[in-house]
Length: 213
Image 1: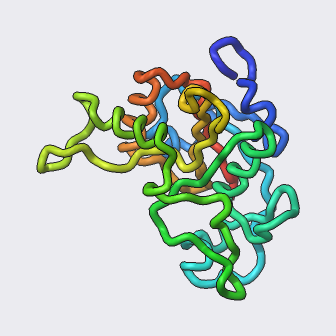
Image 2 (image 1 turned 60 degrees about the vertical axis):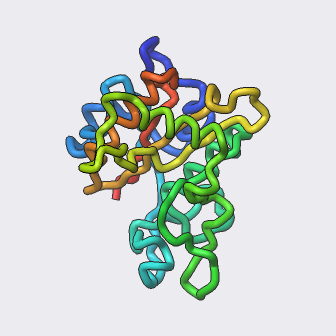
Image 3 (image 1 turned 90 degrees about the vertical axis):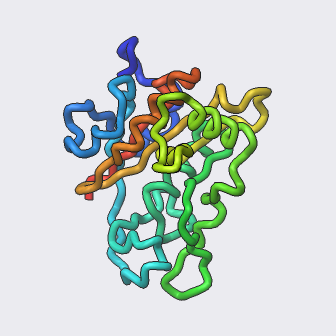
């Protein structure tokens, strides 16, 4: 629950119909490392685990048997937590929503390879408001620095959704980290969440979609 003991509106119309709200205490300890205490929107998703051919690394960004069947029974028929969350943010809120990645995106060009491109973008395609937020975060004096003095990269959540018709899309943004059993948040993710909250993104607009396998 949020600080008022209620489900945030965005959560109620997106992730919750496809899962159950869980408390922070129910998360594996290594999932909490990168999450500030103010982040409380955790949902265990009701996915059916992929049981088809595992394919090669490029067929699923290395997710292999961690892939899932689509909740809406629509393409891509071999999906993943991140793509499904992007789809839920779109259908539940009418938002633009994408899985953000630096990896090669499966493009449907092989028999065992789904096409995840409609729900996935790389950094060079981020909208201007998201590039600015990420830039402002890395300019903060306490942001972790590389040996040469420049800001470290990384830390942004897996999925971002926003109202494309808003005057200031950043004020409507929802950020969801997608994790599964045995996976951990990185320590460098805590600064990004914390910095975004410091810059005005409400903590209740962050969430975690947990895949229990």
